[in-house]
Image (cartoon, rainbow, N blue to C red):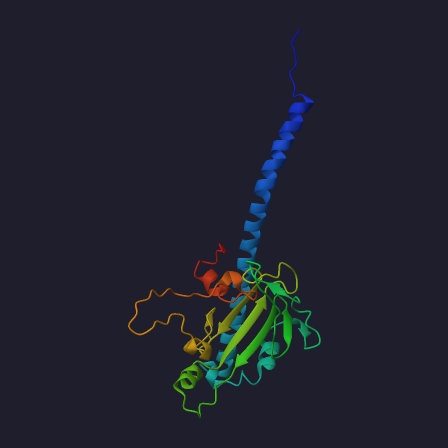
Length: 239
């Protein structure tokens, strides 16, 4: 008589336990990787849509730079004309964005502040746009004159999925800019703050070692410095 062999209950339980442990170790990593890929695609697509809207605006105005337009004084008209808006939130209704965002390293939190209305677009992204007008250069300050040369420009804070989680800077919320020439960048155009910064000062006659002090994407709750980091890494979110 031929004997039939089969797994015992104990062997089956051991096998299932091993599978469970392996799954618990690998599935979260795979899910995290997938989420980062999806978030990178979303911000790339949504930001390019914004840049394309500015290009169309300049074309229709017959201008080559924002300096020849009145966009800084009529920002809401630009947004309402060139984007499909599904929701508008004012000062008393900030539901377009989450009430609070945190940095990747969980050291800082912040809310989104806009000088005008907040909008949720048809692509599910929410935007807060601030326009920086030319400065009054009557003072003759060289710093003011240089800063004025970069204006007008737009600062955009964008949450790619609105108020939905994770609400983390550099994940689903980013800060980027549209320069006077209509170019998309993650670096703020020339600012007074940059002019006065001095990260490495040494006493006269003494040696010192200066290290570059770069702003950190990981400790920005609104995704400052993350946009260029992502774009320069071929839109791979490896931070």
